[in-house]
Image (cartoon, rainbow, N blue to C red; front, side, top):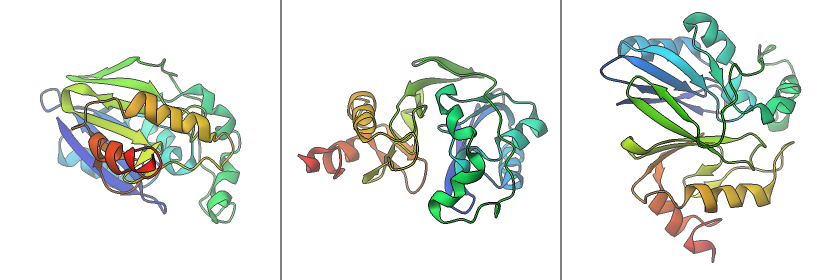
Amino acid sequence: MIRVTLPVGLLGCNCTILGDETTREAIVVDPGADIPQILSALAKHQLTARKIVITHAHFDHIASAQELKQLTGAPIVYNKADLPLVAIMADQPTWVGIPKGALGEPDVRPPDHSPADEEHLVVGGIDATVLHTPGHTEGSLSLWIPAEGLLLAGDTLFAGGVGRTDFPGGNTGKLLASIKERLLPLPGATVVVPGHGPDTTILEERVSNPYVGEAAR
């Protein structure tokens, strides 16, 4: 499998492209900005986007998804529980100190498909399992690809950290439960690509994460 992770936008959201080496079909996860950069990466690897998956509906992860859909025809997949966040998309940048309107008016729409927990998203030979991991937002999801030992965790779990819960829709109890019950039980060698920052592994977070790992006990 081809995996390309690009930090996009002002907040450095990790947009990840997963490509099937045989069919050249791809899943694009969290295209929050910088569509030309994403299209360039797809072209470099001769990949065609077939699904656009959003881990959660914060502007830095979803703002350019509609643009990418218009250019590729790929449907947008995210949890409809995050639609209340879509309704306040224009206000979201102000939560991190960006003036309202400074990023323009993102064209963000309801998902073409809202996946069920443990639903399989299949593109070419890539078989990704959706894990509902609420807490950072009510609709947050993680994408697990068992055959590749890979987890795209969105803003639920970071290297040495966890997602914020002080934005609308956040819930600390749900976040910690999602991590402890859905993510940390995955195989220790699983590579975790968080929504921002460097990769980590499930084993590393089990042992040393100061919020949910053994170091927190």
